[in-house]
Every structure is written in structure tokens, then in C-alpha cells.
Length: 276
Ligand code: AMP
Ligand code: MN
Ligand code: MN
Ligand code: MN
Image (cartoon, rainbow, N blue to C red; front, side, top):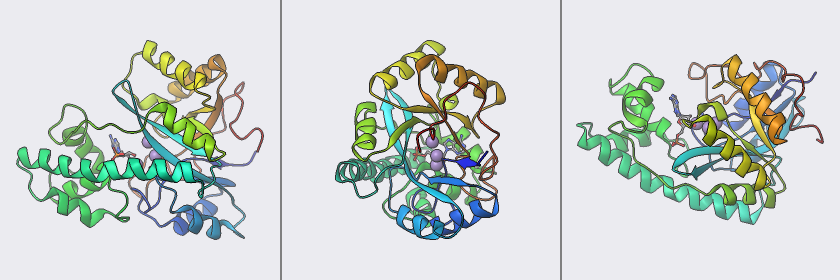
């Protein structure tokens, strides 16, 4: 069975390696089919495609879109997208411009909590001026000694209810699915186990996503426990959605699971790659 990893990041969003280096590492790790899925961005795909040629890797163009759904931030991965598609490019540009304004507000919120210079500090970690994320703030806050590790910064400062958290409106679910489909891709709910929603709301999200034409959910993700993989495999079957698999890798020493380290999909689900 070929090894699939359909979710990871590069320096074009909040990953630590350039696209070509991500592809090289995936090849070393035995990945057969790889998708690069930078946040709200497709600019790394050309380099990744070029690096994949001759590497033995089948490369799939992807992106991870930020969505607001009933006040919750949801991520929707697009797989098999055309990076040149105008509707997708325009949509992503709008979402990215919101990020820059939000970064100022995050810095203001942190300043109010006594942490100064966070905007400039985060900018030192930004690797694409088009894309600033909370991860860049987190890396700076570790450097400045406010926490020992990125995940601790999130817990203490950057999640809902914490001093550096600011609410933000991303794309709608309808827009995200629409842009991905316009670009010829499949829409996949990323790491569903990570959202802080009740079981009832999760079913509502999946029903709405399916009704919008959504294609799949990530059943296997580094964010999921084995029990959650079983749970979301059952949801995939119940909602008639396909199943995807991605490490959500961001860089050495910063991610739970390395590229290509996912087990096979559980039995009884239809893989997102069935018709590839
Ligand atoms: P943003 O899109 O700017 O809100 O940043 C979201 C990114 O922050 C995610 O893609 C992860 O890379 C990272 N992130 C979110 N929550 C956590 C967490 N609890 N620990 C570590 N990284 C996180
Ligand atoms: Mn990320
Ligand atoms: Mn995500
Ligand atoms: Mn991701």
C-alpha cells in the first residue's frame, strides 16, 4: 500500500523548511504521495512540484483554508487544486490580508498583558511576508522566555480566553468549499478531532459540509488519538464522506509525528484518493 501524507507545511506559511526541503524529507521518509498544504497559500507549490519531479514522489497540490463556522475556527484542506485558479487565488488573498491586521491586534492584546514588542518579534520568525500566523508569535514568545515550548505558548497565551487571543472572521465554509471546487480540488475537513465542539455540533458541521459538497474528512491526523481515528472513520462512513490522512507536519522538533508516519486507513472507509 503506498504511503500517503496529505497535510504538511513549509516556510510559505508556518512550517520550518522550504517546500523543496519538505519534499526531500518526505522522500527520505518513504512517502509515496505527498500534498503540501500551507495555510491560505499556494505560493510554495511550484517549488514543491519541481522538487518532486524525479524524486519518486507523486506530488499533490494543496492548501489549508481558514474558515469561521458558527464562531469556531475550522480548517479545510483542498487537495488536487490548480494553484493558478483565479477564484482560489483571490479568495486566499482576502483571507491572508485579514491575517496581517489580526497580527497587529494580537500584538496589542499581548502588550496589554505586559508583553511588549511581540509584533516585531513575531516578524523575525515570519518566513513569507504574505503569511503571519500565531505560530510565529509562539516561536518569538518561546525565545523571549514566556514559555518553554510552542505548545505551551498556545495554552497560556494564544487560545480562546487567554490574554493574546483575538477573535477573527475567516472565510465561510461555503466560500472555502467553493474556491477549492472552482480550482478542481477536493475539500477535506482537517483534524476534526481538534475542534472544541459538542458531538451534536460536530454532526451538524459534517452534515453542513457534506450538503455544501464537501468531499472528505481527515480520519488520520497527528492531532487524533487512536480512539478519535475510529470515531471519525465511523463519521466518514455515516456521512458518506471520504477519508484522508495527514501528519500536519510543521518542522523537526515541533511536530508530534514526522512526515509519512501515519498508519493505514481503518477498514471500511473510502480513501480520498480512490479516483486519483
Ligand atoms: P493561525 O492560523 O494563525 O490561527 O495559527 C494556527 C496554527 O497554530 C496551526 O496551524 C498550528 O500550526 C498552530 N497551533 C494551533 N494550536 C496549537 C497548539 N495548541 N500547539 C501548537 N501549535 C498550535
Ligand atoms: Mn500551522
Ligand atoms: Mn490546521
Ligand atoms: Mn495544518
